[in-house]
Amino acid sequence: MSGAAQSGADEGFVYVRCGGTMSTMKTYLSSGDVFLGHRIVGEHPERPERLQAIEAAIDSSELVGRFRRIPPRRATEEELLRVHTAPYLADLRQRMGDLQPKGQGWLDPDTYYGPGTYSAVMHAAGTACDLALRIASSDGDNGFALVRPPGHHASQERAMGFCLLNNVAIAAAAVRATGRRVAIVDFDVHHGNGTEEIFARDGGVLVISLHQFPFYPGSGAATSIGEGNGRGAILNIPLPESSAGPEYKLAFKKVVLPALRRFAPDMILVSAGFDGHAQDSLAGMGLVEEDYAHMVSSLLAVQARLLLVLEGGYNTKALAASVLAVLRVLIDPSSFRPSGHDAGTVPSDAVRRALTEVQKLHGL
Image (cartoon, rainbow, N blue to C red; front, side, top):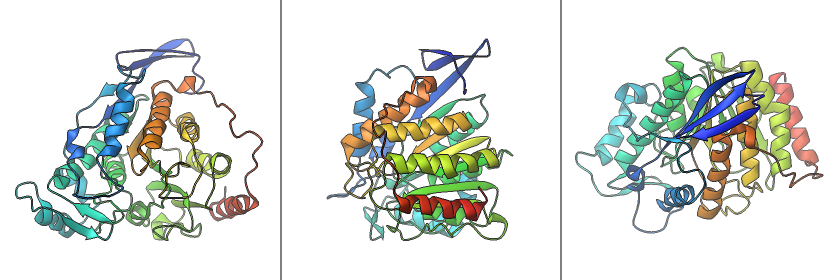
């Protein structure tokens, strides 16, 4: 898809002229009311209004009709068992199984469940798998799984940090089972500790996480690089509070993109959390909508087969605006033009030192 000279859109397709020939690229989008059923009485940052704000923004935008809607689907047992343990899945089923919903409760101090949660988590994992498999077998399609609850803190046998099932890890394992190489890039403001734990000893999936550090959940140091067969396939980029576009751009230039090119994935999955936005009160970073668009544009230049799976983002206005900015890039990659809003802003020395350490650890 890189080097595209001409593009247009019609009924969910973008036609891209590359080297004198025309090819079609589809952008898939999946969401649904099933994800609104995960709710609790009272206040909580991870709430249905997050998705409702995104959908309202899309419906009132110029993007309507320029992507292909895919209905959510439930995950299969086989897909779940590639990542999560049978006892953990049985415990979730016993607590909140959709045949006999049992009200509401808490799996950890941050992670709730209610009558609609089991169906939501099963469909979130299944939808991520469905889109990932469609895109992996395509010539260059991309997509966005607008699902909830998020997943990147969930480990093989533990719910944590609003997350019950690890949607991105389940999707990555499904694609890897087809024999393809998969990379995961996590730009949520929190370290994807669950994803790292799942693949730390694997080596077949490259996991890159950019995150505020030190911060919840306390993991994600640069020196955490995987173990055994997975040594070197876990790549953490800890960034100090107040990092913004210039710091993330430098991290992509020095670490993320070189690591991806070296690994040469057949597909990239993104844990797309938007809680690093300057308006998000749950963290302390300074990203804006264009910064997210820039990251996605950079990833598409490495591998056109790209799927974003929603993670965090708790200021509904900033979340919706950021998703729209990213969706525009997915639909028409050649249309992205950086505004230069942060031109002349120099990344801090602390960030430069941190990136140099990561480069040395990974031979980049």
